[in-house]
Amino acid sequence: MGIIEATGLRKTFAGEVPVEALKDIGLVIEEGEFVGIMGPSGSGKSTLLHMLALLDDPTTGQITVDGIDVLALSSIQKTSFRLHKLGYVFQEYALLPELNALENVYLPLMMLGAPAKDYGKAAMEMMETVGLGKRASHLVSQMSGGEQQRVAIARALVNHSKILFADEPCANLDTRNSEIVMKLLRQLCDERRQTIVMVTHEPEHRQYMDRVVWIKDGVMDHEEMCGQ
Ligand code: ADP
Ligand code: MG
Image (cartoon, rainbow, N blue to C red; front, side, top):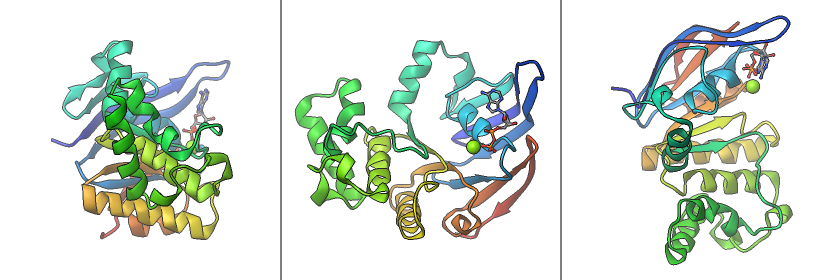
């Protein structure tokens, strides 16, 4: 069984003119896979990611994540599931500028009620994993975009998230920093068997991925194996 299994996903946004953003998408993602979602602007990539990541509900369809029928969960259960099992990285880093990097990374553990002595250590280990051990005490507002995104990745994974969801995480980064972030994601996949689902519109990112799901007008166009 895949770590994510989705069938018959449809999402229609209500409005004066309803938008059918997703039309009958089916998808299986295996544990430890690094999967890209690609396609033209407005094709439904972010909408699909939001459904798989439990950030929004489909209009119809079925989704199991880690064996759980997630659409059957109550809103409180869903929040708990997200906190314990899922990690998120977006185009904007969404870090707290008045906190240092380490404090940003341990916030999710505080929210989960971990003892203070444990969360400091776990956060520091994650900072080292993303190559920023020496910068743990720096304010994130004084870090480069690439460093801030690596702090955001550390924060997303500090709770041992089973799946990392990323929506255009390199969109605000220059080529060099994008490469550092993509190599880091690949390394997390290789060394920790981290499952990663990432939206991107950069064809060069395929070299770091196992597979790309191409979306067009809300339907799956084709899948591409990337030969990692
Ligand atoms: P992509 O990420 O591929 O650029 P999106 O998933 O953001 O595309 O959007 C797919 C379609 O759904 C677009 O036509 C977009 O305008 C529409 N859409 C996305 N989110 C909303 C929303 N919250 N309300 C209404 N329409 C939306
Ligand atoms: Mg998008």
